[in-house]
Amino acid sequence: MNGYKFEEVVKELFEELDYNVEMTGKGSDNGIDLIATKNKPFNEKLLIQAKRYSKDNKISSKEIQQYASLKQQEKNVDGVVIVTTSNATVNAKELASKLDVKIINSENLHELLEENF
Image (cartoon, rainbow, N blue to C red; front, top):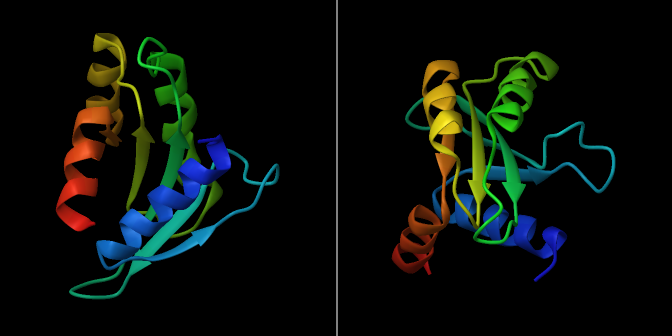
């Protein structure tokens, strides 16, 4: 599955989780692949980065810093989520916690897909 198809899978997953999801389009996303919103039980807006990585290619601290800054690109953002087919390094996980970046790794992703499809 290519990266664009992976974005479509992530879009469908968040739609199953009752979000309205917009794909930002190839090449013009400024690091944002998907914008997920919902209005019930309250307004929420998530910026999602989908990373189809091999098992050994982990999300780095540098990527966490980059994606944490996505909040500055949009108004009224409640969170940044990285969805990956891999995982994150220990340092990246610690930094993500400090910068309030959520990571859905391969294990979490597999569970979510099984629960919702």
